[in-house]
Image (cartoon, rainbow, N blue to C red; front, side):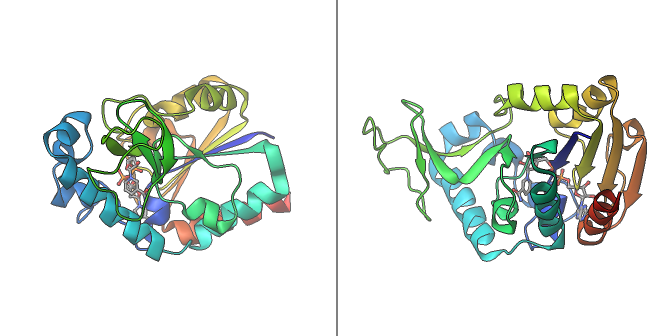
Length: 229
Ligand code: NAD
């Protein structure tokens, strides 16, 4: 059985990282257009770099929770039969032992040159005057996907969705496309679909089945069930 798992901010919530759309989430306190668009970055690079410096610091301090650990256990046992795709830009899946992790929205721990697109490891604190190691331009940005930009690894994800027997979404509101449409693609390929979420999301009606509750409880229970058959 081929399984594709899509995770969102909800899986890292119990590790202390902010979600986006929940009450008190990041977008309730900041303006999306200022912090997560190419236009916002062009207007005020210092503000945007500071925002991601803050999130990088928070992610470094956070530790994986039982939901990350359970998915790593599943991957270790099932190998290539599990494809783990995350919208998260933290590294909690990796630190729990997951490998590989498909980061469709990039990573907080990468830097990207706005001039020549070279990538390098992000410094703990990125500054507008940081220079690209390849071309020397002072045009550093976090290696994350902003609204209006194309997510990463889409060919790999589409191919996994086309071949999967089970699609599971964990802790994602279903508000951001294309990830919110993966459930439709998986269903069209004949897969069963399952949502594990704290509360219903925008796409809950598209799933065959769902369970509501914290990821740290639902995910280990689901993994135990999969590994017991
Ligand atoms: P979202 O904030 O829109 O939705 C979070 C979802 O998680 C909601 O459905 C909520 O009910 C659920 N949730 C909250 N606490 C939970 C818990 N303890 N257990 C299970 N579910 C819980 O997040 P999203 O759908 O991932 O939004 C998409 C965008 O948010 C992505 O672009 C992603 O890059 C970005 N994001 C990433 C991080 C991160 O890297 N940790 C954090 C915030 C947002």
